[in-house]
Amino acid sequence: MDEIEMQAADEAAVAAGGWALRPLLLAGLGLATGIAAQLILGDSVNYRMEWSALQAASLMGVTLFAAMIGFTIERRLWWASIAFGAVVGVAAGFVTWWNGAPGGWSASEGWRTMSLLLAVAIAAPLFQAARDEGAPRTPYAAVHDYAWQNVVLWFACWLFVLIVWIMAWLLASLFQLIKIELLHELLMKNWFVRALIGLAFGAALGLLREHDTVVRLLQRVVATVLAVLAPVLAIGLGLFLLALPFTGLQALWDATSATTPLLLSCAVGALILANAVIGNRLEEERRNPLLRYGAMLLAAVILPLAALAAIATGLRVGQYGYTPERLWAIVFVGIAILYGAAYLGSLVLGRLAWTARVRPANLALAFLLCGLGLLLATPLVNFNRISTDDQVGRLESGRIAAAKFDWAALAFDFGKPGRDAVERLRRSRNAAIRGKAEQAAKAESRWDLAGAAETPQRSGPKSGVLDNARVLPEGASAPKGLIDLLADKYQCRQGNLCTIFLANPAEAVVFEDSCYAGMLDEGGKAGRIVTYCGGDRFVLADGAWKDAGDRYVPSAEQRAQIAAGYPAGKVEIRPVARRQVFVGGVPVGEPFE
Image 1 (cartoon, rainbow, N blue to C red):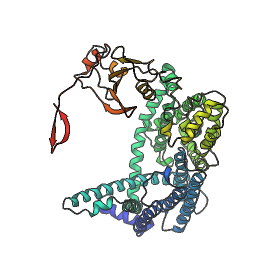
Image 2: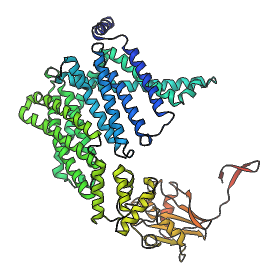
Image 3: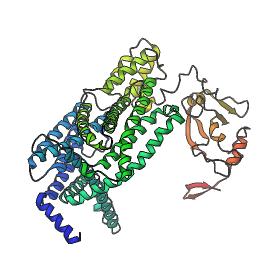
Image 4: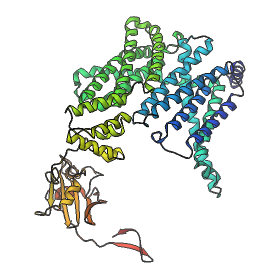
């Protein structure tokens, strides 16, 4: 097809179902959304954790209202998209306010937001398909097509926003060369940035939706690329599962914090690539045997991957109890098991015709996932409460000592239930629990409690420091104030040997032995550069020892000499003459030899 024919086909498509005003309408809608965001947030650039519940709810409601109109509106039944956007916006705003109103945000609220957005993303193609049918019916082909189309539009629009942003900064820099600062100053204003992003996204969405052939071409390109990757991932995952009986599962369990996310990511990848191969309907299936059998292998491995993730998560929970993140992991694992069972069942029952069974299963699971996402986005299922009850139960039963308990998580990650539990534990009959709860209640941030879960209580100022330290020069005694300070530092913690070099009564340098032990390779030559190694200088000022913040890092040429001299205790401070530039009697720059 030549250029004229393609243009004619494009114009015919626009005439049949297009809407010439849509690009302008959506650009205006995007601009209005950006301005509304500015009015809601003001000049604040704070993260969501610091927004009020009303601000977060208003922003979520306005944004999703505009997004649902932009992605679903058609000239025919335009009012239905506005009504759908209004329902989604009000519901999303209410759910967001509901989460934030009782006691502010917690660290797990991000997952609730993701759950809400997932529910909305699934609801959009279901609505689009039902609107086209003019009845509460959702044909799989239409739902699947709209879902892919919306994903492609989303990423394409953000790519356009990025290009606009880069172009704006290039122009601003260009005008700066001739001393015109207006555009650069505008780009530094929050209101302009938000308005520009909204305008660019809306304009891109309107233009792309008005050129349906371009979007469908992008869909085909994306689907083709993903389909080609299907056998590659299928072979890799198949070999991984086949290797497990020979390598054993212990390595997976030893890395339980990373196992579940990796396994679930592989399962999601298998699900996406398998659907790229099978397409919307029988006529769109890839006929290449490599792609077809690759998709079948991907369908078969989803359930084993989900089962391994379930075991890894169960081990983690058994060791450390529930947290909101682990409860979310349980939800994701459960969803993966449902999809894995549906795909493996379709494969076993349908064999080569398995796609005829898996498509209805996909649609049923989409409805289930949409409802589950909306439910989990609300406080009706309170993972913070469940986690708090479990962790406090472990603490009070003695399964975990107060010194090793994660007080930072209870006080700052578990929301209002966690903070209420801290207040209750301040009145505990157990003195250790009561003392730790008092510290947690007084902490202004989780960083004030950093290390509380892993640092054991010390019976005295020398405990745990001098047991791990060598003091130089020989016969010298480290001051009590310095030892007390080092008790909360990383250099001389339990299992981490160190050397304390006393340069004079008011100055000391502390070295980590593990750093210098790695400076020589097996052949005795200078080994790797350990960038964090060096001596940390501490000084006595105003009657108290303080970290001076100075650190010395050796060069490659110096490592062999240091590695040989360090075990022998050859550590000293020598006066060194330096030269430095002075201008008007004031030192400028760093000293040099």
